[in-house]
Length: 229
Figure (cartoon, rainbow, N blue to C red):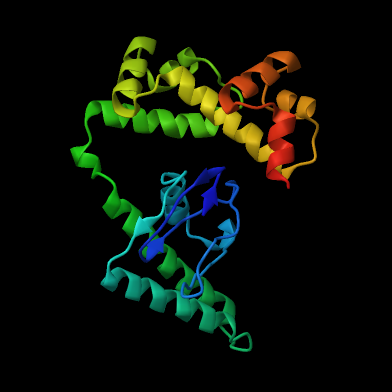
């Protein structure tokens, strides 16, 4: 499967959450493989779950053991069955509740696969806070100082935490997030490359073009042509 232009492979029963903003391609599955897909709008998801889902993107497939796979499969089949019972008086509310139960099971799997908050180091906690802030503000805040101020720490300490945890400096994370957004817009929209550059906060179109090519190994136009074939 391909998500945000990165390829992932699953050899066992797996769970995959795809954020609405992520670009994903059709799954490539064999004749003996079954894929269940549930698409649900944010307005139907309870607020607590929405907050938790924001914290687990971008994401990768999670392998499932037999019990968790069976529970998720049954929950999905219940959602499908209830969806088809459109004449029931409580159809909408019952369907919404069943979908949220299914989403709760999905979130639980991702939470189990991540380190508990009480076991995170100070570096991990700062990095997690930085990533949340980056996702919220990357269009307007492009300097390390912006995020250091956001977290009330020095630029040097922020960079030390992020680089120690991820292996990459803060500036590279900022560039990567902006380039990812550029790729999404090149794929999804019909906006010109200049319009995309301006939307991302780059009035200097030539600078944006050089930045994109350096990060992606190809021009923005070549990327668009390649991914729309």
